Length: 202
Image 1 (cartoon, rainbow, N blue to C red):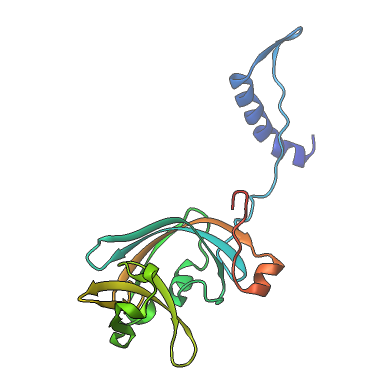
Image 2 (cartoon, rainbow, N blue to C red):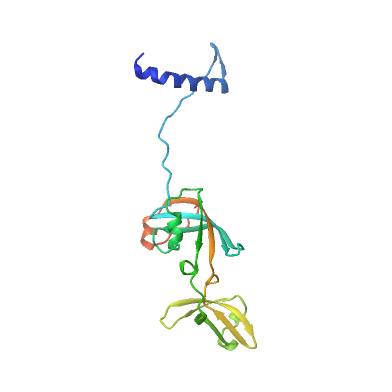
């Protein structure tokens, strides 16, 4: 027996004996077992990185640790495409499926400072009937023609107050993320600059 065969024999016998004890079966010549083993390299796990479509689970908390929202199906295109805050992308970089991280965002790092200039109070008659209910979401244009989303905050004495600030504007918040899935982005996604949800699975 050559040197290479001798080196493999103890390992082979150990594995062979272990399988024999676990899965013996009767044969005309006595008890025996067979098993085919496939040896290969450990798979390389995909990491969060540029041009990857990432699915996340997350919980969002305010600075008093009250939960603001939870989702388990957020999907975005990683790598500076605008689908996630820069600090969030930096924290997720290099993680693999199942890994978690926490990210604290100050207002200027996340949802922005609260801007009183985005709050308007106008007579009810200025608004369509369907908008005359607290919580209704509206869209309007600013002086530069940019679309701004508003929410009806108050209706009082024939006046409606709408607010164009994000609901979390001015807040320091904490995200707790878990990476649920990672895949390579498709050419179409890279061209559009955002990830597309798949109809089956993710």
